[in-house]
Amino acid sequence: QVQLVESGGGVVQPGRSLRLSCAASGFTFSSHAMHWVRQAPGKGLEWVTFTTPDGNTQSYADFVKGRFTTSRDNSKNTLYLQLNSLGPDDTAVYFCARDFTAKYTVDYWGQGTLVTVSS
Amino acid sequence: QSALTQPPSVSGSPGQSVTISCTGTSSDVGSYNRVSWYQQPPGTAPKLMIYDVSDRPSGVPDRFSGSKSGNTASLTISGLQAEDEADYYCISYSGSYTWVFGGGTKLTVL
Image 1: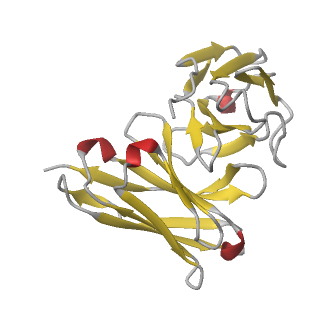
Image 2: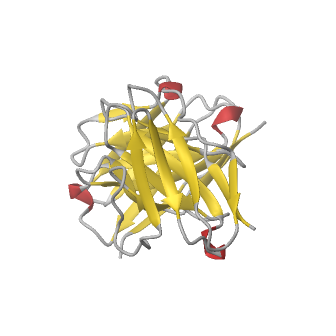
């Protein structure tokens, strides 16, 4: 079955960086586009970024403003999210999610990893 | 990329029907039949309930249905059950490989 397992979250000081990982299994990772979605504590879901199956094209939400970078290693079935210049508003659970091919939405989600930005 | 507008909360008694609206703009909901709905019980990952405005993934009960008119999409849950109590989110494709979520709606089953 499809499994997405995020890791790399933790407590980080404002202005610092963090790299999240998402290990995929149960499907052909290299055939699927992928997303990152985040959810601040007690708040709603917020789409963050998308990358195509080959990793050659990415898109980002406006609030990212060049601070985040998504990438993937299809040989390792792993998706990454590099978070730079973090601020308190970036505190959230970050979910890795599989793109539902040709349906322009997400079908499977990981359980998320919590990033807390605090001094 | 402004969030889609959903009512903060809705409620209904078992067996009743409830409808959750999701209002966007001509740049997202109004331009694409690519609206999906997710169910998220507390502390869990979201689950896809509706995609492409009104299609259901396998395993989702037909009590869940979706529709769209202009810039507003809607999710209707009929025959409400206690297990339906959760947060519900809409999401729309908004072009150029970008997406926008709604603010979420808390469904309470009375």
